[in-house]
Image (cartoon, rainbow, N blue to C red):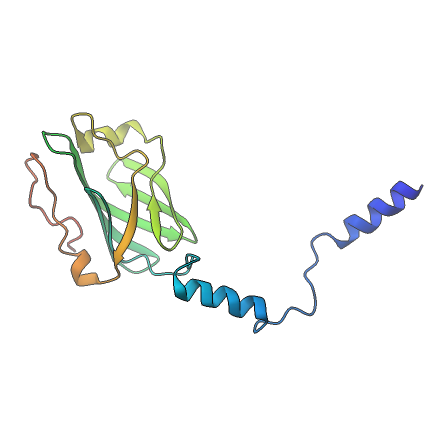
Length: 166
């Protein structure tokens, strides 16, 4: 009987938000300061901009809801990927479409991460042993004009093509 009463009390408290939460509490101010300092990623950060890590480049141009996205991966010696398409944002989820190559990526405010396993349709976007799998890039700029200048690289016939042009 005691266990049932204890279980009822514990479960009764689940799902309730404290009624005395203040938006300007010390915790809320600390969280805001951490986001401003770049210690904690801001999940509401704009998606538009230039992204890079090593020789991987991503551009995003457009609104936070739906935008153009381009990717250039260049490992030299005919090893690379080039893709242009659209990205639709829903919180931290990104629905990416490069033609028939469609997948969900993650966005945490500072970083875009492609899934480790890509659909077979994405293989045609790459040459050699290169892949878009697990592509991870960090923000380098929020500038629309900078993002719209990303060009494809490598030995593909599309080399030099603007990847995020409207």
